[in-house]
Image 1 (cartoon, rainbow, N blue to C red):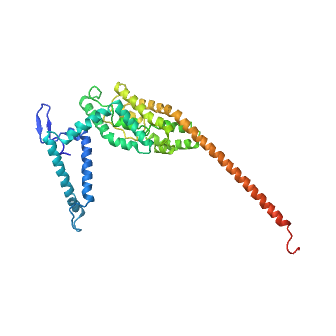
Image 2 (image 1 turned 120 degrees about the vertical axis):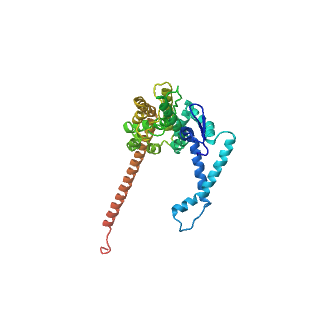
Length: 358
């Protein structure tokens, strides 16, 4: 990573100092490049180990010594490749980390900070979940480096100027935006469905799921609801499942872009922190109140769709109950007929003369 990073820095007076590693490239600016370098190093090292292209020591050598020799060939290969890459970029008077930042990270940060970019993220997460794929992990794997970079950039502005705003270069889309708003109470903001199940459901299925999924939903875990209802491959519940996080993201974007809500700093609440409490931690009382409003909005959005799904489940349960009663009645009738035949047989046997009577 150091070999592929810039090796000079400019002082406040404009003087260029060589043979140093600027700390700026070990932070937010170098995050995406660092992830790519770590990925390359890992797969290259494992490639050598899987093919046993290593120095093998005799059995009597202590394991810690043998391990050090095992790493020599993969390590030498990785350093050689890094040196070649450094030479290629040096010929163009730049470095690989700078190029990644300028060509990949900066455009992605700019795109992610626009309303269309945010809506794409807010849509993709529940969309993937709809097909049973862990959308939160997949999308976060791509967007978290960008979101964390924006978070670190906002904190750097706070450290330098005391406050972060859009005017002094602040970013809207951060890790807090993703964890505590887009995925609030779980992908699809399913708290609206959980509340319906707890207070208004008629079907036994929905009532049971509400009791099972209520506590996890408070901590932003909604797999019991997603797979138990199910929301997966359910076109009726897909509408609020897609729509709610997109509406939340839109309202939050305009709230922060107009200054009604403060931009996020470097304070990050764990993704399992309950809503309202997480808003208080990451943005103060205004974000806590705003999260409460969004929770009420989620309940309103889900209500109509949840009610329709609940009625369908309730109708299925009534039909199953009626079918069970019919089967039970049929079974009782058959038992009664068998009992009548048994009694008739016993009566016939009692009236039939025995061999001694003959």
